[in-house]
Length: 97
Image 1 (cartoon, helix red, strand yellow):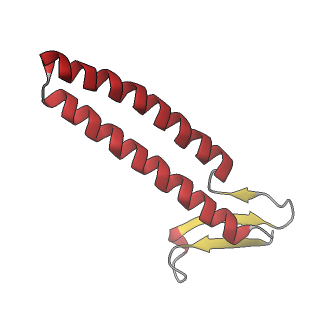
Image 2 (cartoon, rainbow, N blue to C red):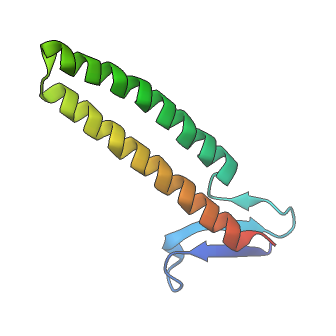
Image 3 (cartoon, rainbow, N blue to C red):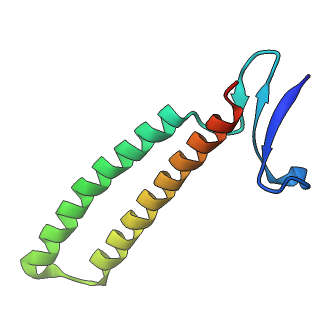
């Protein structure tokens, strides 16, 4: 099998990010950028709805540390999905023939 690999560290195979199988043309080890993008969009929509509910709860006088923790978690989830999308797009860009 002949493959082209993307490594974070060129001297360390344990940092393998993704690879292209030249026999089939399949890119493995990372989600496609399209899939990552739609997961990112779904996460944004869900978090927007949840944020509206939490902000409404905060304005109704029930503000608590729980609202702050949930909104912080939502921001972290969206950041993670954005970086995942960026990484998959970068790996696909390097491996596309």
